[in-house]
Image (cartoon, rainbow, N blue to C red):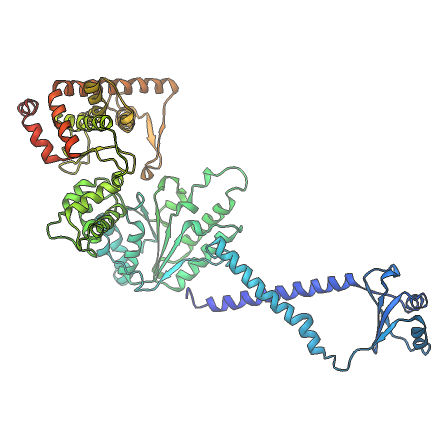
Amino acid sequence: MFNKNFGDKKIKLAAFYSLGVIVVVLILNYLILSMRTEQITYNKFLDLLSQKKISEVQVTQDKITIIPKDNSGIGKKILYTGRIDDLDLKNELKASGADITAPSGNDDPLINLLLSYVIPIALLLVIGRFLFGRIDKKLGSGVMSFGKNNAKLYAESETGVTFEDVAGQDEAKESLIEIVDFLHNQDKYIKIGAKLPKGALLVGPPGTGKTLLAKAVAGEAKVPFFSMSGSNFVEMFVGMGASRVRDLFQQAQEKAPCIVFIDEIDAIGKSRDTGGIGGGNDEREQTLNQLLSEMDGFDSSLGVVILAATNRPEVLDKALLRPGRFDRRVIVDRPDLKGRESILKVHSKGVKLASDVKLEEIAKATSGAVGADLANMINEAALLAVKSGRDEIIQADLEEAVEVVIAGKEKKDRILSDKEKRSVAFHEVGHALTAALLKHSDPVHKITIVPRTMGALGYTMQLPEEEKYLVTKEEMMDEITVLLAGRSAEEVQFNSVSTGASNDIERATKTARNMITIYGMTEKFDMMALESVENRYLDGRPVQNCSAETATLIDSEALSIIKTAHEKAKKILSDNKELLRKVAEILIEKETLMGDEFMEIVKESSAWKEKTEA
C-alpha cells in the first residue's frame, strides 16, 4: 500500500531470509554429521572386525558403514570406509558375529532429500516466521521490519478532517492555507518564481490541535498524508532510524504531491550539542543527520510538504529550524475566549444540546483550556445527562462538567464533621468576601463546600468579566490577597489555622516570586530578570539566573509581599466579621452558593457601599 515496490521488497526479503535459513541448516547438518561420523582405513576396519568390536555392518556398492559395540571404546560415532573387492570379507563378518545389513531396494533418494533437508527447512521457516511475528508484536512498531518505516498512510479522502473541523486557531489556519493553495494551484506560484515552503513546524502546548491541523491541511489539499511519530524512527537496532527516514522520503516522493507529518519531532530533532561524550546518542544524531540531508535533497516543486509538531521548540537543533528545511513556524497556542466558544460549537455538533444552552458562558469559565480539555468537557456533560436520565444536555450539565475537569467529581462518601464543615465554610467565604470587596479582583461565580475527588474540601470559583492578556501589579497583589484570605478567615473566626490552605499558600508564593523574578514589579530588583522558564509550552519550572545571595534576597522580598497581602486580607475580614459569619452560615446550610446569591447578600452591606462610593 505504501508504494508500488512494496510487494517486490517483501518478496526479496522473504527470499533472502529463506536462503539464509537453508545455508544455516546445511552448515549445521554438516557439523552434526562430522561430529557423529568418522572415516577410517580398510585395514583398521579389518582390525576392529577381528577384535569383535563391531555391532553392525551395512554394505553398499561403494561404502561400508560400521556401527561399533558400546564397549568398544570408540564411543557413539558411526565409522565408514570405502568398499574393496575382498573375497574373504563375508567369512570374516560371519566369524566376528556382527549383524550384516544392506539398503532396501526402495531407498528413494528423493524421499531421503525430503526427509533430510526439505521438511526440516520448511519447519524452521514456519517456526521462525511465527517467533519473529511474536517478537514484532511484543516490541511494537514493526521492529522486525528492519529499515522500513511504519508511517500510517491516509489516502486522498481518508483523513476525514478539513479546516472546518479546526476551531479557535484562525492564525495558524491562515498560515497553512497558503500551502494548501500551492498544492492545488502550483502554476500561479511557479509562474512568478515562488517555491513551496519545504516544511512548517507546528509549535504549541499539548492538546491545542497540532495533529488535527496537519490532517486538515491534507484533507483540504486532497493529497496522501503520511503520519509518523518521531519516536518510531529510533528503536532497538543501530542504523534503523536513518534507514527509515530514507524509506519515508522515498515513498513520499513516489506519492507526490503529498504531506509528511512527523509528530513529536523533538524525539529525533534534539540539539546535537546536548548529547554526552561517546556513542550514547549516536543513533539519534545519525537519524537527525539523515533527516537534514533528505530535507535538503528533495525537490520542493514535486509538492512534498513536511509538517512537524512539537511542544519543546527550544531543544530542537538549529540546523533543523533554518529556512530551507522548516521555513515556517506556526504557533498553535491556547485559544482565547472567542476561540474556546468556536471549539465548543465544533465538539457539540454531534451531541444534543438544550435550546437554552449558552456555550459562551462555558467559554468564559474555561480560561486557559485547550481544545482537548473542551472536547472532554462536552463528553463529560453528555455522560452526566445520560446519568440523569435526560436525552439532551442542559446548561447545568456543562457547568458541572467544567467543575469535574477542574476539581474532580463530587465525593459523596466523604462526610465532614460539623467542626470541619464550619472551618471549610468560613475558609471559602473568606476567599469570596475578600474577592468581592477588592477593586482589582475577578467576580465570584460559585462557592461550595462539597468535597471533590481531586482533594478539595471546597472551592471558590472566580470568572473574569472579559478575556485578559495583561495583568497589572495591583491585580496580582489582589490575587495573592484573595488566596490568603481563606487562612485569614480561619484566624479571624476561630483564632487558629488548619491544613486546608496548603494549595493557596503554594499558589500565592509562586505569584509573589513571579512578580519579583520574572515581571520586575519590585523596587529592590527593579526590572532585572532573575529567572527564566524552560519548556514554557509544558509549564516547565523556572530556572534561577542569580547568585545564592540574590536568591536569599528574593525569598525575603517574596515574604514581604506575602505578609502585606496577609495583613490586608485579615483587616478586610476583621472589619466585616458579621458579614463573614452571615454568609458562612448560609453556605453551611445550602452547601453551594452561586455568585448572584452571594452578591445579593454582599450588596446589602456597608462595606459594599463604601467600595462603590470610593
